[in-house]
Length: 215
Ligand SMILES: NC(=O)c1ccc[n+]([C@@H]2O[C@H](COP(=O)([O-])OP(=O)(O)OC[C@H]3O[C@@H](n4cnc5c(N)ncnc54)[C@H](OP(=O)(O)O)[C@@H]3O)[C@@H](O)[C@H]2O)c1
Image 1 (cartoon, rainbow, N blue to C red):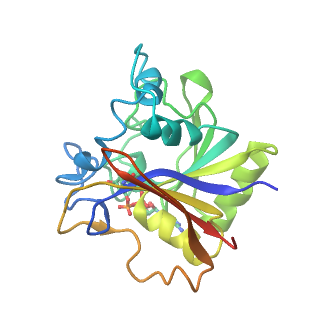
Image 2 (image 1 turned 180 degrees about the vertical axis):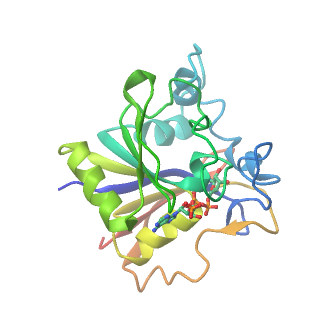
């Protein structure tokens, strides 16, 4: 059975997955980049960015798990880029350059249709305008027996969690306070939705937590 999995989703101590005022200079909102400081030194991150070295250990174990047995991904449109509303032209192709780190089909939820974009390295962005169920169905088909990674952002994860469709969520709780932005779990009754914490592992940089549905 294909699973829908969230990995390496970083939140602040006060629960935010992005800071306020996302824009082209602040893809994660103001202050949000600090959520991810734990992952940058890992071997997985360094390799993803074409560099040698990087640190092994707890953080790297969690980072690398996010790429195991993944055949497709789903993103929200705000994670894909800073443009809001209708696409004024089609020059924006994501934050990640010509060879994005997905290497699979990626289904981007949006209310604004756009042709698919074939990138280098096996990533194709498909823009889905008929909702979360349709995106999941297409992603499951594309994954061809492997799992689907739900990349984010916050609104997208909330919708899938609320619909009971996320099987597993790895959250990395970073030791920072953001005070404002996009709150991941606000309004979600996680126990009622069937989740419980099945793993919690501290590293010197972050606390890793895994929430599993129906465990
Ligand atoms: N902390 C982390 O680990 C982490 C990970 C990933 C992303 N992020 C951050 O999260 C932020 C983005 O999160 P977000 O909550 O602002 O937005 P998001 O979930 O990325 O995208 C929301 C947008 O996607 C489209 N959309 C979502 N659901 C839809 C649906 N059912 N039907 C049609 N369109 C739909 C809508 O765009 P339109 O109506 O404009 O088309 C909506 O405004 C970014 O700052 C990103 O960097 C953080």
